[in-house]
Image 1 (cartoon, rainbow, N blue to C red):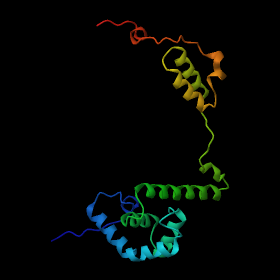
Image 2: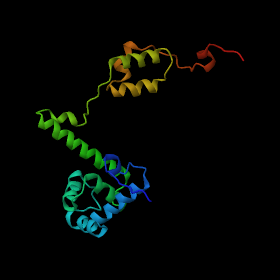
Image 3: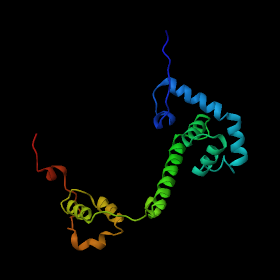
Image 4: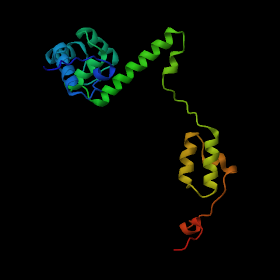
Length: 183
């Protein structure tokens, strides 16, 4: 007597995270049945303006969900399967969906939805600049590294001139730095 198999979908199996070959085959069959390639092509041509030139948005995916009565992950799976999006585009769309979801959750509790947006503000602990200056003063890093770190703080060497030790122009050789180790 042959055992019967049953599948229960969850987040892992729907988003192609399952390593079960039969589950992947079942998901592919469902995607083909629910979202035939001709219908997907037609939708993209008629409903998404300049699809070939512009990338899709999470809102476009939501419209496809509604049209085909499938989940967000199912639309992404099918579009990727049809070669309409690549892995990077899929990740971008999934991230966009998550950002929208978190923004909606924050608004629903009266929170600040801007907390979900990337900031251009740099927050580097002040101890880090002290550490870099110390390392420069002790010949552990070159001036170029010091200058790169200062760029993050929007500073120049002139701004911290009083805190740095002037090095002689001649390069110290490696054996001097190490302490003259012998073979």
